[in-house]
Image 1 (tube, rainbow, N blue to C red):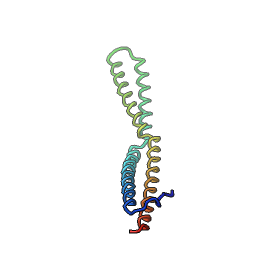
Image 2: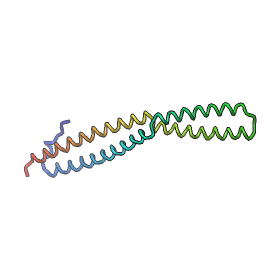
Image 3: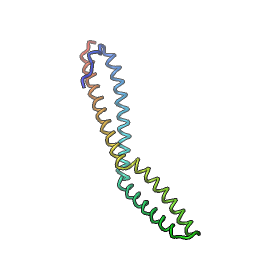
Image 4: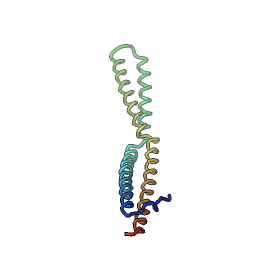
Length: 139
């Protein structure tokens, strides 16, 4: 991008803009690091692992539900109903985890990382242009 650097007429003005850009770049680098750590978390947990666990829990819920339907009232049925409630809770937790750590979330994180990288590159370009403009100005 072409910047209107000719509008900067003093070295102090260049320094002011440069300081602002450097702060913005530091914030972008911080956010990039956070996203990289988040991405590492995806790789450690594995999105497929969450989906596999969710499929297994869903199957268990269906099985337990079928068993409950065949049982008469009593302690055994109560035990299976408690087990089903526990499985349903686990299923909900995994579903939330899948949404926040699944493949779609991984792709979103990768997209955000790419955006941060482009912004950091552009900040570096602007900083270099500011230094060149500053060097071209009279003392």
